[in-house]
Length: 110
Image (tube, rainbow, N blue to C red; front, top):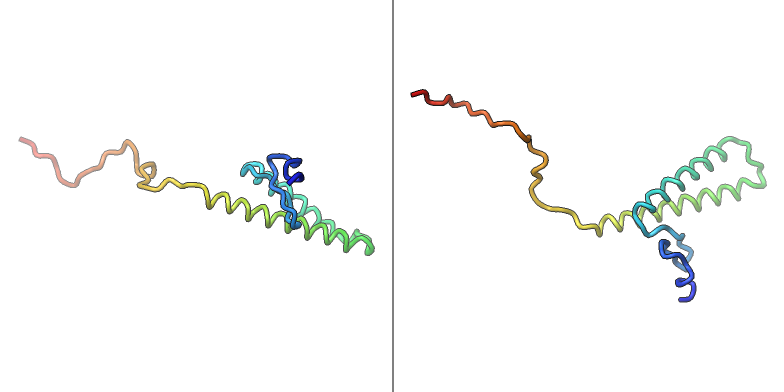
């Protein structure tokens, strides 16, 4: 319990090895974008063939950890979006606004 009080309020921290991710959905989205950029950089570096054989496994493990963090963050974002209330009802904003409906009938001229 003392570890939870010492942590920043904007992070969700678990003790079971699950990564710490932001609690705010906007920050969570930015976190996912940054981690994805880092993961892509790891992929490019690993595929370049410039990684020494001794360090390849280390970089591969770091890349896999980044992938797991991204996956977990996306799951958390999905949970947040699932719990977000949605407006239900008729979508009045999709209809044509300001246009008069033309009738096929001609007006009576008296």
